[in-house]
Image (cartoon, rainbow, N blue to C red):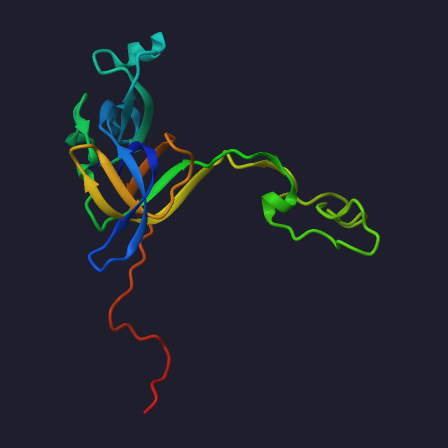
Length: 221
């Protein structure tokens, strides 16, 4: 099966466990997604499927020609897979891909904050707030030496565009799955605003802790 599905953020809520503990969750609408294109190693050089999500009435003519007899889907995404033979054009994929207790990665676009200074963007503490200073409090300070290296080094933390970037949140636990309404609740927060488009995939970097594994510390006798 596909390693992930397209969806969107519905909002945040709280759930209670059997022990009475409060768990903050983010509710996601995952799917249904439709297979809109299949790429094979023989024809395209690699195996992948293209899936579409969220129907819309407004679609360009090239997009309508690409989808042909499929629903008018607003968002398209290509996902590589080695099992292209298991898919058919127009096949419907839903949230049943995930189960409670699974770990997932959620990929989205973070909220755009516009142009921000170093205090807000990089959490600089600022300069002194006394001893006669009047305009240095939120300034970044020196950005480098003059003779050596004689330039501003690449990657230096400075003021600029904040947010509006691709962000991946790893290893979020699936708390509950509502297959009838295509809803998925994951523990914690996900990137982006409400109604933002997300890609939810099975976790790639799961933390595995072996039981009875030696820690290297000597036990006291």
